[in-house]
Image (cartoon, rainbow, N blue to C red; front, side):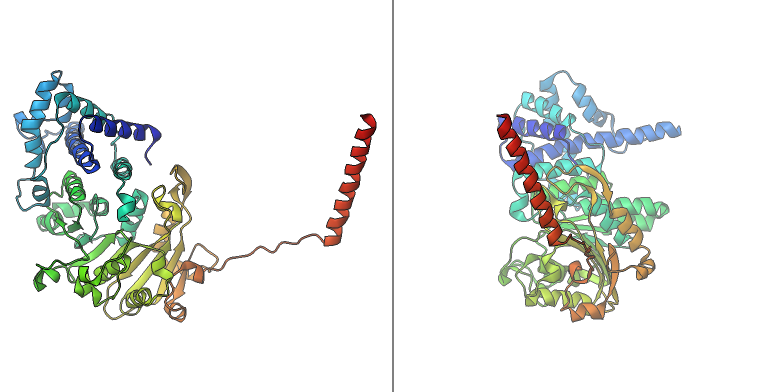
Amino acid sequence: MITTEQKSKVDKMWLDFHSNGIAIPSDVMEQSNYLVFHRQLDELETRREKRARIAGEPYEPRVFVTKEEQDYRWHKLMDMSNTEERFKLFQEKIFPWLIALNDDEDSAYARYMKDAVFKIPTALAFEIIMQDINDLELKDEDSKGDLYEYMLSKMGSSKINGQFRTPRQIIKMMVAMANPQPTDIIVDPAMGSAGFLVAASEYIHAKFKDSFYDEEFLRHYKHDMFHGFDNDTTMLRIGAMNMMLHGLGSADIAYKNSLGVSKDDDKENVDEDKEKYTLVLANPPFKGTLDNAQVNPELLKITNSKHTELLFLAWFLRSLAIGGRAVAIVPSGVTFRNDNDYQQIRKAIIDENRLEAVIAMPSGVFKPYSGVSTEVLFFTKTGYGGTDKVWFYDMEAYGISLDDKQLPVEENDIPDIIERWHNLSNEEQRTRKDKSFLVPVDEIRKNGYDLSINTYKEIEIENKTYRHTEDIMRDLFSLHREMNDVLSNLEDIL
């Protein structure tokens, strides 16, 4: 959650960019991210230095390696008193160094940073904006994510594109449900700032620490495990920088419209993602439609639909390897709409693969940018079916208020969701009146493949006993007489 104080700091930074000739929102986003990235590199190096010092071990610099590069560090730049020299150093030395930071020419970072341009025009503007960046709260991934979300809202693009940053709490829940493994090949086909990929990498770091001593795993982790696509170059640069900060500068981050195919694409390119991945983590944009001519024809074999939310589900089914699983956010309409294309995709997931869970999220999760109602679907690609019982959970809270203020609250179903998901055998005893329960697949089929939780949940209606009408009328007449007596006494007094 971004505080009012943080919003004020971002607003000031935005105004300072505008006052110094950088008025295009995407330029503000990019230029500020270059400086945030530079600051975070220094903070990352500082944390490593402190850990080595506490352990009593010598420290070899990993980011600012040479003696000259030590002078590039953010805190040293902030300490410089000569604004012109500081501006010249950043413009002529530090920014080119940032662009060339990953020496792997084939890496996503190298590809998307090579065309980066430093646009802050003067030493005075640079001094003001550097101070703005220095004042921002960037203590963890949550604060960075909140900052990004607020800046995205100022760009005015989130609602237009149907894109909303997924709250960090929801990302962590989905990753915990997916339980990424060291052998996984993970993809987000609409990656934005790479939040899902970063969270998956953090999960693997925490759960499989010993694997990082294995050279073969380390190669897989750095080069082959993570894949992210987007068709917005600003987001690609931000995502590439985010991955670089997490030691994944060589991950497969690519410019791609996952649903589309260009006239120049040959069959090999069209098929490059087929059955390639073992885990999809995604909250793709689900606003709008596409003409069939704009869509990869391989997806139309799965669903002959124009709706992007269904086309992305088709992409998941096509791109997952057998045994691969998808954990994805979809608009609630996907679970219950009766149109043929909506029923067709649900039928494909249930009858031809294995649907395992549907989590109904409260409509305020994406406030203040949208009140859209959403669900999390969890399914495994089998190619032969296998759906038995589907686990439903009616999420009512996630630790943040469901209004525009987005304040922390005590109510939070996420720990319960994760605990129950990993102990599904205990759910057999749950009733339809509980927050979570299992529904046999035959019942779902009888209901036209409806996956709306309200179709199956039992609402307990409290029986209230009301007083008899004659008793109520007697009381009303008595009150009326008392009122008349009061008015009569008042008239006598006056």
